[in-house]
View 1: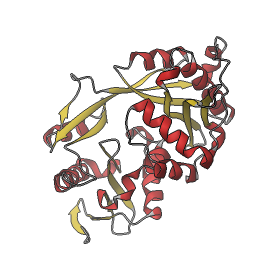
View 2: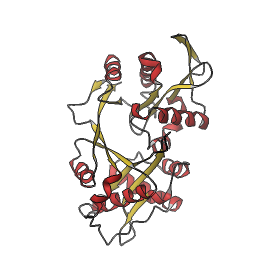
View 3: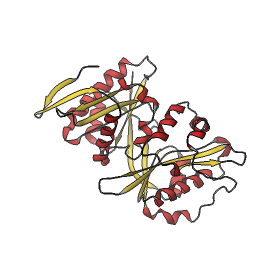
View 4: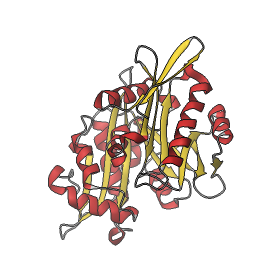
Length: 315
């Protein structure tokens, strides 16, 4: 793992190496932003880059050219059970297959360690036929018939018309989260909503420290007794043409406060704040079998933009 791996393809020398910190992280984000239509996670990268996967740098791999220009990267995202990666389109399937080979070998190597899992998932746009072919050749199986697929939905700047019917739960206030002072309360709420211990204090603290983090679009619903009842974490990103996009990631309502209109209220509050900061298109990602989430996002003006396929491989 500590030594670069070299090979030649189409007169290009490609170097495989380890992750080396924040400078690499900036290059990883830059590669994604150069080719946003090829990647699922763009606007919400800061959230994913804050996860505790980065406590295991050996689970990250980079591929560069001879001038150390980043061509591809891969991360085994432990809390998500996913293999996140991106690569320069001009490198074609050769580099994609190298990524999958490394991920496969590494997943087998760490299966019985704290950062390992008995199965890993990879997502692909339904239109990425070559990528899907590579995944199937590498032994990943489609989850299309087992209720695991999800979609990306989006809205553009015309969504304001949908907000006139908003009837928020008026007993609840909707301030921004109070940063470091509410880290523990947020972590407890997140864990309860998703019935998982994946969210950690470290993850939340790193989120707050990201340069892309904006406290004003990090919203929470507070119950009359002071408990945090719901959250809507929003992100913004500007593309190379200056267009601003937003994303909701994540949003959740505590089980004790569901069916009170909190999901609608906090979502529309987040949409208004993203719009006020210049977002002309806003995205959210949800599983295709979550009917309540679908209805919520449709009621706010979202429409399906992409069908996302999930592939799984067991170890």
